[in-house]
Length: 306
Image (cartoon, rainbow, N blue to C red; front, side, top):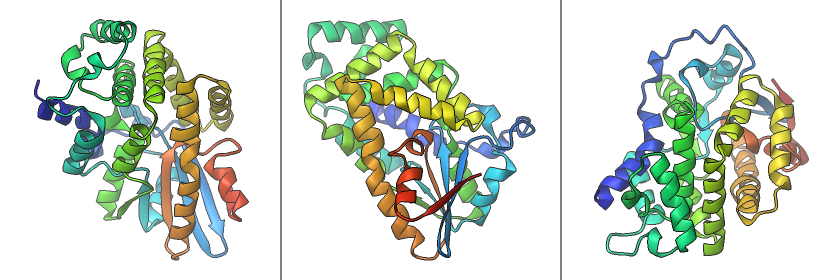
């Protein structure tokens, strides 16, 4: 497989969510839970917005979202996502720049220990994945792709993520899609990490795939999201924060909590312009003492869970 073909395949997992016609998904599940997902109303003075917790993969029965979650989407002037990955050329360019080794450069198989290479090849073989293109990925990208593949094996796909649904709603309602960061900034977080941290992150992902930990954790997040069970989500976050390995600390401190100050500043700045926004972020970003809900309260906002 050529490098250009590999890049297209890597980014397809990201951009397909923006291309899927979610209007065709039935509403058989809508009769179930009107509080599916997490939603907070955000106020300060005359400013009003909504904070919506998402899951980055999904199943057909997630949609449509219940009326209590759709009303803010209809009222808002714009929807703000962590990253808008509907621009396929942009996503491919970011993947090529940050996530894979260029043609002619040594691959990952020459950059890791024989023991780690054997573990990678074992996981790839078990899942009938060709090691040649996988070894063109940076360690952090391979970790994410392995986790994504494991999620797909459990029936969850990015094409059915909440973000995919929101992109479709925004298009149908002719509402702008704005970003907290963008795919480039998210990739930079991984790429700027020390090599030892990137390897530790990959090792954590391998361990989670080998033990089926990815599926168990994802099932917990999805179950909490489906039932708006904030307590379960907070317990999961507390367990993640209690882990002391290098890979786990990077995930929690940098990829999760480390992004919150900038997100809070973005929310403050945007709400100050007098428009109303739905701020949609992964559900784990919302909870805990360093989550967005508590950080916004500390900045003088009133948040009411809906």
